[in-house]
Length: 347
View 1: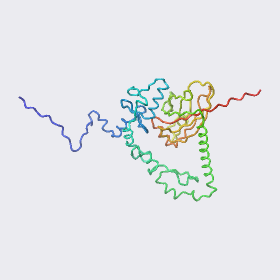
View 2 (view 1 turned 90 degrees about the vertical axis):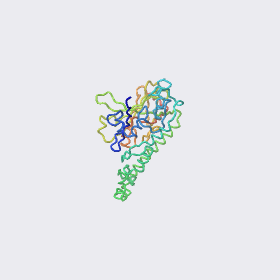
View 3 (view 1 turned 45 degrees about the vertical axis):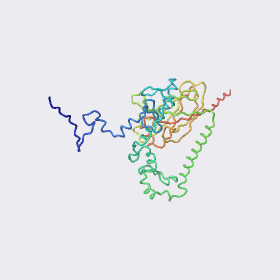
View 4 (view 1 turned 60 degrees about the vertical axis):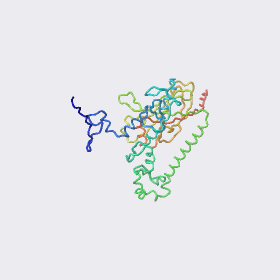
């Protein structure tokens, strides 16, 4: 009987070890990815494929959806009369009763690293906002004397040097009067916006929708980027919102300063003219930094699109951050007011 040769176990090298999944093995390409990168791909939303910023829901089979996309799926199913809604991955039925929040994933996402937009330092996602607003030495700050006209804006670590060299504290009252007047005008505008909003909140007909701007391309030879929401229902009618970069500029990528504008579009026929006041807010699922402003338009059979109005985001850097996102979550509030009937012409 032949002697049985024992099976050799692979010897583990103490130096220059070749990792499992190295070159020539299955999964070798994944070995070069960091663990947090692979976790980010696993924990992203199944709809927008981005890491959630708020609550995370899961279907009965465990597929993850951020709160914005989850409510969007439910609303889309209602609008298309395809009740109930289904998970985009496994097509199982989803609803607020059948889906639950996944707190473990929410906590894990908060601990994943994110890069500071100013200093490129890696920090947990739960700490990045405080770091960028209060702690980062590279964060952009204005001069202490901005209220009297100093226009300096620079990194925080240069603030002390600029403060010592700033000439505005030595200017006369007559010289700083123009800057104070600009501040008064800005505060007056904010007060008018607040007063208008308080008056609109007392109206009988008002409604809000939590929406998502999603990127699209035009069919032109040189395509242009624009954003559009799905249709939503308000006041018994179908609507949509569109957004444009730099007022639909031909080549916005060639501009260093970028801004967004948007318009409200009526989808369908309108039986009679309707006056709508509307404004955009960050909402519960969005983190866009913007200054709210109330706009007004009278929709009619011949005017189903509002004028393109500026979306007053904080600055160009905030605009770039929004453009880098897969979706832009926001809340749209609409108010319906009585339309003043046209006066008959005198013969």
